[in-house]
Length: 259
Image (cartoon, rainbow, N blue to C red; front, side, top):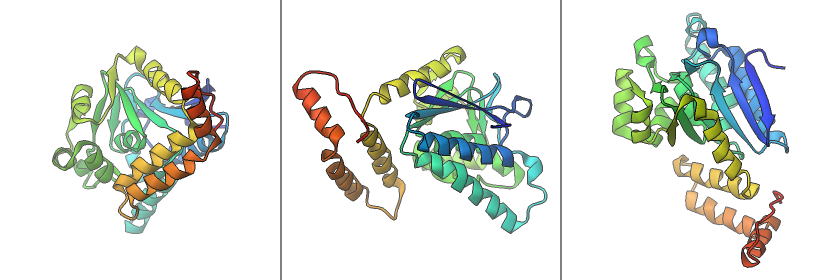
């Protein structure tokens, strides 16, 4: 089904592994298109509650974009490339109603850093490194990196990383708030799965509501407080909310159905 990805699902968690280790899992047209299909599967398959995105091999999560595809592009082609990536993958991940976590197992540079940042949060191995080195190519990030890096670590730190092209290690990424957890490489997927396993016990509609309302903080076209109020109102009438309240009052574990 996929030529550049390995997709496996167990316990309602889909693990999407970018599988180009000889190219340090660099993003090319095929990877972008297949990631788009895999994300659609996560969103639309009722048997999948959440997902992990990671890279194949010990060296890289995604070490960037495939630069060989850049040389033939003019301005219109460059805009189309960036827009396609945003539409198919990066914005789809960010706005997925199901949680998608990046398990960063090595270099997350350029498009790889952008891919990790589009996920709802990030877990990193001790060897992970992050950076947006596009200025070294005479470019800027094109898959949302200038926006999400500022959102996640603040304008001053983001400006320095964007303009120097420098990398930061996992410990610094944790300090900056770019990642939530740093663990040993052999514990990385288990850590991501343990967090998602807990999230998967919660009410699916409420999880989707958290994602929608939190994303509205950064959308100038939306009023986040209004979205929160509307979502709260819709959820309080749901079967899951009734079940949650009943379970709390009866001192038992809730059984959520996503309804």
